[in-house]
Length: 304
Image (tube, rainbow, N blue to C red; front, side, top):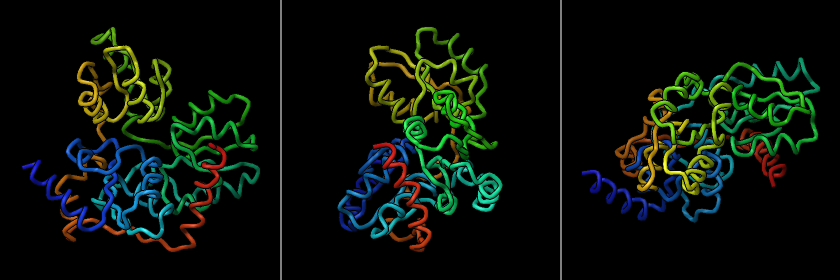
């Protein structure tokens, strides 16, 4: 049945000139029919060069918004409208606008995991893989890093010469994993390397053999000569790596590392978008789009 649904999706997307983007955290059966699989920013960049006029994002809302910001001429759909991101929705323009007014000498650096509305008043955008490089390349020495305080703390530790302020926020899934989980996983798998996302709490990242973005973790595991790995990010990455590297072993750091928003999108959702029975078109006024694009343009300039 899954193969039949996949075949129908492949047929319809070709007929309708559709590019399907799948974040690395979605189910394997979705990634198998996607044109591109990767992290949020990487997918947005792929969308800008894809020849198709229509895009279906299999991920969460801020990712679909980022695609629209960078590809305004394309029709962009979020496969499942309930797929949000708690981190992206934690802080709004009013909160950060008030903070900026009270601290005018600070530059606001926004993790890409933020809404398009919030991006409109931020100065620079970053991804988990580019954050350290971009903040280091910035002329500003006083920085407010939002919304993930764990990623912000990791960046601050790498760049001690800059004053980096943090607000309480972040990914509730990664942040819920305690140091105890590391001890338990290492006891079970003493020969395994620990690969961790910087959205995890500092007590966890400090124990890691490698700290990096989702793509970074996957690339590290594939290139490494090691044969066993404990994966400290969304549980689906261990699954994808097991498919990609059947000669290696991958263990989730914690069974808590499951994102319900990423799991909200199903293969049938994708099929129903193509049938015109599901999904939500991302609509954005040009003023918002251009204002939000500014901080992404700065990310590209500083990360080049």
